[in-house]
Amino acid sequence: MNILQSSDGHIQQIKRGGFFVILKKFRSLIFLIFQLPIYLISIPAVILIRLISPWFLIRWQELCSSRIGHFSHLTEIYCCQRDAGVNFPSQKFLDVFYLKKYVCNKQLEKMWRRSLIILPRWLIFPLFKVNRFLNKFISVGNVHEIKLLNIESDYVHHDTHNLLKKFQTHIGFNKEEELKGKKILKKFGIPHNAKFVCLNVRDSAYLDRYKEHNLRDWSYHNFRDGDIDRYVLAAEELASRGYYVFRMGVKVLKPLKSSDPKIIDYANSDMKSAFMDIYLAAKCNFCLTTASGIDRISYIFRRPIACIFVPLGLFSCNNENSLMITKHHKYKKNKKELTVSEIFSSNVALAMETEKYESNDIELEENSPEEIKDLVIEIDERLNERWKDTKEDLLLQKKFLSIFEDRIKRLNLKEQPLHGKINARFGAKFLRENKNWIR
Image (cartoon, rainbow, N blue to C red):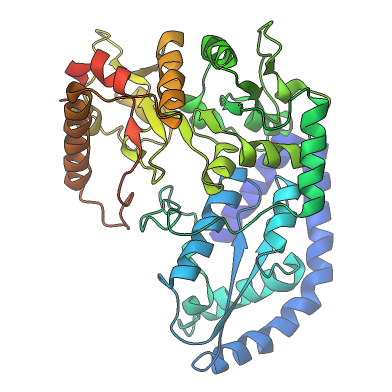
């Protein structure tokens, strides 16, 4: 039955993708044929690895190198847990990794190769497959997989032990890369030691590239999208405060329209590169983002985040300088805004697909340009120690967190916790203007 289903799946992909898919599958078939000897050698190798495991454990795992968010954040969480000895074997062990066929950013790959043992996929993937096969007969092989890097759950990559606060980032730039980054910043017209912000507004253009070959429909992510036009006011506010603003993105739907020379549409720049994607996100004063991809680079380099995010239940950040708000959740029929408690009771607090919002008759309304502007003003003033919380601000923050934590507990999740201690704040101005929402 599985073979028939697999065959039917291949046929459907070929019908949708045509010659491109045929060529891709033919290439995969040739590669598989050449790998047969490696698979044969892997059988005794895995048996030997299993036999010596009581004394020396060898583990492997695929790094999720196709998506920059997972490739950066998930791998950094692994490194922090390794250093802290959290969820790691007590015996002697060796961890080796391999990459997916597609690597989203070669600079990030280069940096991880300096910190981890990353071996060729053609060598390690057969060990993984043979070990999985042998598990059907003798199920002791799970210890050879690094479960910390399993992304089958949408939530496993959260820093539940607050380790990012305790350790420095595990990747960095060498001297040549530092000089290269500063040189390119100068070409952009950025003065030495000038402040700059990365602006990351997710839209469907990046993942829709794959639709060209009908390989996958990514529209289930559309609930996370934002309109770059709504961020111009915030970008110009930042420019007036002395920041340069780099609009990030590998591929975007439309340009960032502003005549301010301090606002740079880097996503559409001829100087855009894999190296500068990482360098900018790692070196920015903070990242204004809608919670996707490149902001995870800022996060693992311990840069503050000003984030507009959904779903609400994933509100989690251990950086005390970070600031969050969420989109407005409204019932489609009467346009009434849902409260925090209603978001949880309506089954969308952890919704990771557009369809879940639609099936629960809920629409997400983007934040206004003024709300986004208020967010960047607050984070700038907090970072420069000019912000003073009022008593009302402190009470509203406490009330929100109390309701949020209570609702998370009521979900009674059997998986690992969604987050550790929350050190980030919810936007003060947002809470002031949405008091009825905090219920």
